[in-house]
Image (cartoon, rainbow, N blue to C red):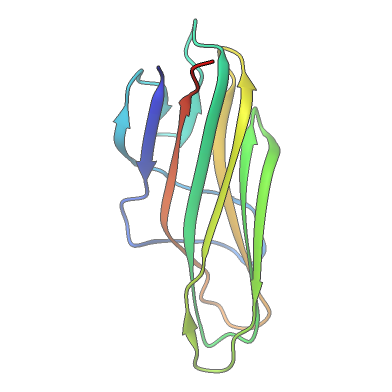
Length: 143
């Protein structure tokens, strides 16, 4: 069945404060049907492979010298948000902390539907906005 998993090969992706940013997934670990495109970080349901799909994503946040933070991760289907997770936590001056954000959902999908992963960080002060170790994957369920 169609299945894929990929990740961002650099240490981190810098994002603007409180802006939903498409996560770069530039390295495939596997892609059984050549349905994941690393040039646009998008998984597209192949022709003849409509059905139920489990899609997931994750990243780690990185922060330092900030006094507040919120992270969000979204799954998009055909350009619209279909799943979101958020995490809020507080930091004090000179703290360095990371937090993992995960999201997943099971979708009914037709051929040519596409999926993308987005993330954001909201910092109340400071400028260190990094999303680290982004991972994106999914597979068709046998029903």
